[in-house]
Image (cartoon, rainbow, N blue to C red; front, side, top):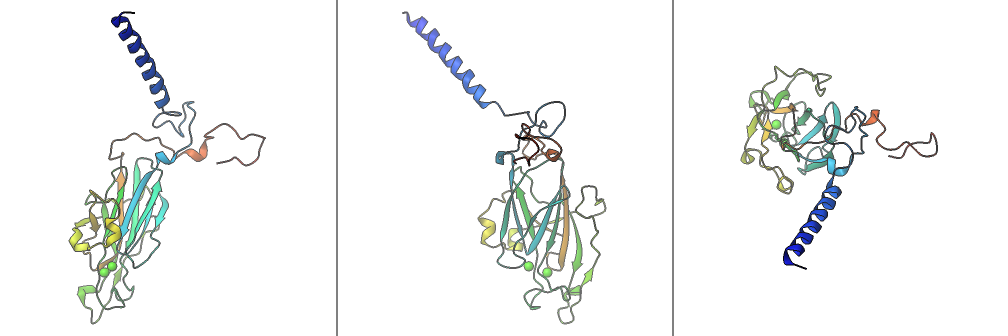
Length: 252
Ligand SMILES: [Ca+2]
Ligand SMILES: [Ca+2]
């Protein structure tokens, strides 16, 4: 057999192998935007590969809402200063709403058994590239001691709006968050054990006196540019074949 013919056979085998490999790489189910959508395409179940990791650090406590739903709560209200790391199934646009609290005495605004004013600080990063920075909105709802008067400490409060975490809450008149340096917030070791690269510490205007702060931010599309299926409508569709054996509870 001539050398040229061998090259032809080998090239043919390579092309067939490449086609088989490409077939194996094809995505399951519909492409981005297909899951949970109409149009006749059969939705697939979300996989862990569809989730993104969220890392959140607060001095001292937070609760986190996404698209109006509570998704994470800081499990330690004071010290040690911990990181909460959870998996999220994202859908966009994504409205993030956070309540952050410094561990201040509600009557004096002071920390550590009323021995000092103390400071706050909040930072967040999602694996889709979402990070905290001055593009976020921030509004203080409890602050003190007024005038830094620790001899006669008193606080001021604003009522927290009932639907502050809702997607359609109007935050247009809220100020922008203020960024603070790592040196100012002085995070503890757990912060350095997690990925916060590119994220900024934020708070309202006074990281020492402002003790309860609400943040809001809308992520229009994944910052990393990656297309992701939207599973937000999953409860309204049957993601797989119908349950076997009649009307029993469907396995999830
Ligand atoms: Ca603090
Ligand atoms: Ca404080």
